[in-house]
Image (cartoon, rainbow, N blue to C red):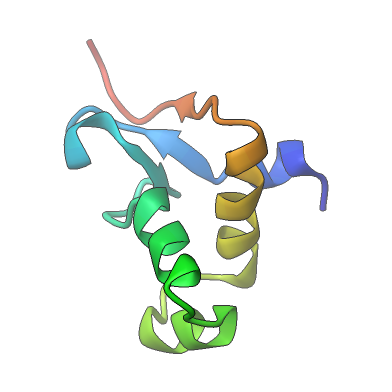
Length: 77
């Protein structure tokens, strides 16, 4: 899966976490996933603890570090 396809999973909704990048419109911020990985949690552990996450979600969070321009969707002005 290319980074562009993965990054489609990352969105911004001003009604969720003050507009911080989130995963697939859910209430889990990219920064939370990255923080847990940085703290030593393995991707497998995250997938166990957060059953709604998919492996591609974690890959998308990692890809977002090199391309930090999230898509804006899921909201109306």
